[in-house]
Image (cartoon, rainbow, N blue to C red; front, side, top):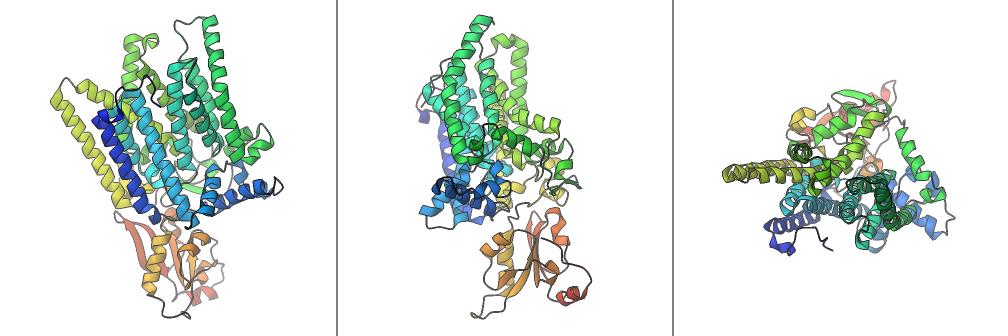
Length: 543
């Protein structure tokens, strides 16, 4: 439903909208063609099982409480996992292919939400730039397929921001359609991660940001009260969705807040690497997440976001806050949404690992800012048509270059690094690489090709040490290959280069998975070394 303040005219009247629709359609086609290429992540087995436990909890009439003792997953909402379990029950396909396709399509919805948000703020051209900017962001696009909690959460968050902006324009009496849609997005976000509670604060900020000016206390109080009453149904709807997807949250009203504080004090023996230094997750420096965001996101996105912020600052300097146009108010709000969670993480020095994975949700608002910023830049250059045309052409060339990088990385787009660290080549062995062991299917295929086709049903069985999840290995390996817990006793060793796991066990390298000449994973033949290892007085390395 179109908001009265959105760009007027039919959707197809703008060439930018037509191109945007074509790009989105192309992304959907790309998802359909490529979703089988992505490996099962380290977390997916337990996440899918968590979804099954939630379904069992309801099916048993709340008697089967196993989900509350299943690792620490009760601290998370299970909305995506519930949907995936339901889809698996009705579709005759592999459960993890279904998960990857479902997650990717939700990711596409997040790209559409990014487009819609930028378009709402600054028009169709800004929407197109934001759409392309997010789609070419490796951590987002590559993460769409098997980051099955982080990317759906990011999609829900940007959807909620879109409807909050529409609500803000109509306060204190926003349209019910926008209120209900915000409630749905609020429920989806909190039904995935407790961090979705940020949306309640963002809703309060929208109300304050749109207070009538000049400020009069009585009028402001009435405005806040009416706005709160109008938004209350959205909060109720969001809460109901949250507790349905997150049974632990329903056990006590404060459990969602307890989950947030629990995350802030995670102290598992998980290690991570940044700038060549290895840290425990609880000991990472305060700049860990901001720095990973800086080096993982395409620099063109930051250039556009900077243009948007500069344009808004100049508008404030020229006319003051009281005269600030809607476009600049909303730009400031989106900038806050993008920066505030990262600021909190840095100030509190919270635990972190796997780079910026848990902050994928700030990528869509960054892309929105990029779209708005480049649109403002092109507007400013429009009196000088040749300069504006050259700027637009340069932007298109940069986007084309970024697209070519992702094509060459496929299916490891989430490992993309920008030129601040020298791309993937500069990041190798100094930063997080294939932490999801996405190389598993390619490595298993390489090993099976090395062994040749099985001759008969009684083919020899080979043991394989796997630096990764046994479940994922078993999903791709044929009957000749058996995962071996003791790596040194195995016939073969399969490992990603993440945290130098490939260097923990010797062997003759028979296959190397590379992108841009950088090893991502290796397969080693240990059959000549196995007997020696059996006689050595030390244990196998743990998985």
